[in-house]
Length: 65
Image (cartoon, rainbow, N blue to C red):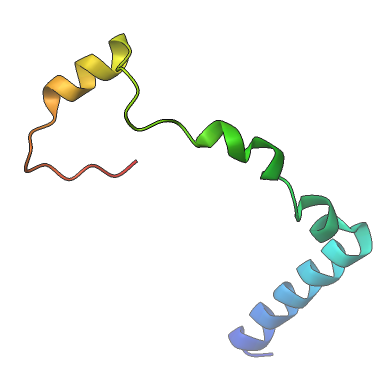
């Protein structure tokens, strides 16, 4: 058995296990009920923590959250 064959068998086994346990259906809509909480107003007043962070960020900085 080649490394590729072994890897493919692991992928197949994982897929079969998830199907048997119905995990894909369980996790399909996992975050949708939380989505509204991630849509914050970008123009809201800064809280104390964001004021401190904003003081460290310069106009030419790139921020990845």
